[in-house]
Image (cartoon, rainbow, N blue to C red; front, side, top):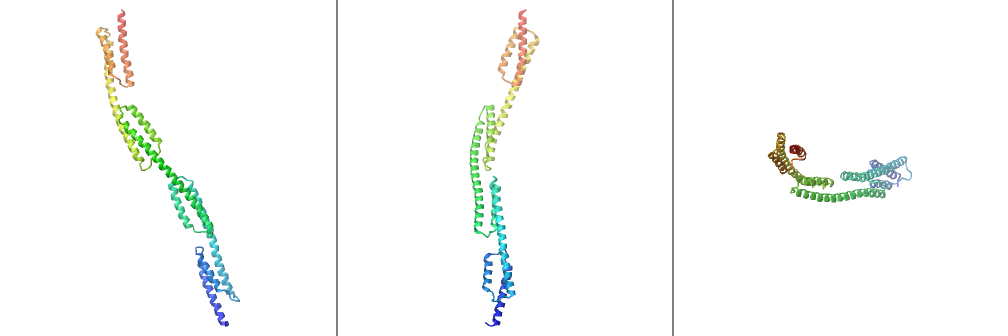
Length: 306
């Protein structure tokens, strides 16, 4: 080979190296490693001249520095990705300790999205290990979630059945004529209702509406009953006050005749037929009536002794 041809080849090799260096300048930590390896292969194929010029040596050093920078960046990126994945695992573990599954599920999905964006480390075995740890934590969370909702569904079913039984009892009580006893039973049913857990969002309000409908119907019946009782008490009290007034009038006259005595005895019999007028009024009315009776018959005894 002539000196001219050899010089031309060297010049061409230097140009090829310069071109590869320009390409090497474009690579970064996100560049596919296959692209970088391909550049290295192309560089090796060019080879070195028997006596390297300073320009050739400079190009070799520059290319090597660019490749070293790539792998250093790759190393750094790998470390960053590893730290990011370890942080995501820690967050996933923190979520797993909570029992707020709705919020936890959303958080787990967000962590999965972040995991997909985190990228790989330089070590496939390490990547696999990190993924298995993250996957295990996620699985434990969703297993716990499924178990929780399974138990919750069973609780809902049990609560629904228990509340349906209370509703049936409440509806039956509406037919009772013993208002006082039925009222006490309704109080017991309400207390029992409060001890039963929620039957689920889909049916809880409907169940309560049915039970409360029976309660309200009973309250209306109870109010009507006590209004009638109150009216009856007032009527009885009025009748007893008339008897008291007549007994007091006879006592005031102090005429202890056979007719007056017979009338006082009739008043006693009439009192017995009237009936109850309420505890407070009953006691007071009876006291007033009894005072008139005692006063009259005491006066009658005193007259007989003369």
